[in-house]
Image (cartoon, rainbow, N blue to C red; front, side, top):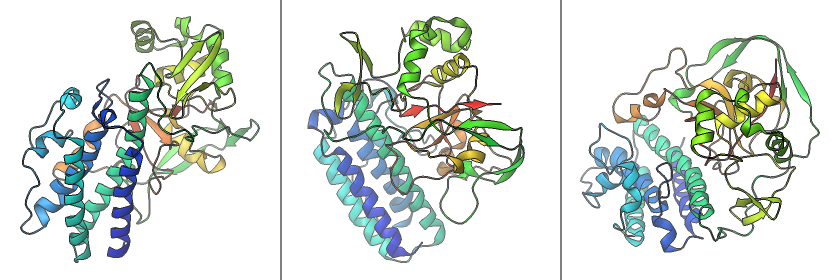
Length: 386
């Protein structure tokens, strides 16, 4: 990537993060209702700290830290970098203020632009690219965290009136046949990818059929009406415990009002559209629904082998695959090596993208991953028949 393109990519990404925050009021920036949701102002600071810590601090001669305490406040999980605020306490910090964090962003932005305009070695360009895509990940988290913050306010405030999520899929239901045999999985080429997408390798698959469409709200209502949340035989033991301990009886953001299903969206509380894809499901719910249908979820390898036959992008799609390293995977040296490899345990892979995924951050080899109970992201499912 040329330095001009890198600079443009950096600048447009930094602007987009702030555009996401434009509809917010100052009070919205500070809220942290659960551990998995970070305050919007923390995202603004953390994505800035990444460039300061991994680019400017080690490589920009004479760089002066904006504030020596900000590494403690805005470090996330980089144990090798130093101490940090406990994740659950991010919402307890009224200071630094939102105004100060925007000043911090401007300070780092200015010096990053100067730094990029000079010739920098390829390994530093690679780190800057990681930082840009890291911020794009946080843009998606920003939207979904904002939705959780506003969606759990009893007044159901509107984030943006014209925000549409997700859209109705127009194609009729079809089952797409995929022949078994060896399939190439993983990223190849020189364009950007994360280390967890490497190395490209062969996987043997049996014949299978995969739906061209995501499961809809109407189909999921049938599951609810048929007692899906009360039938222990449909659930993993862990999933059944989760349902009962948390009194789960419908997807996140669904509300039964005056005998009708409603759903909170970033455009506010709305009537549930039965033809739209169901979203905000946990892996446990996706698995139970597939069991109820007498089908299953695809593995991540089946999904990748078939993805060029259907449209994807409304929701992240749960797969039946555990998040594990590919053959030949090598974790990067130093703190950057903490980015993906340390999370390869007790998580499920999701494939595709969602309506909240940022532009230029989409690949068919992209491996998203979350714990099975989480559903605050735009997560849905696609069915497979063996």
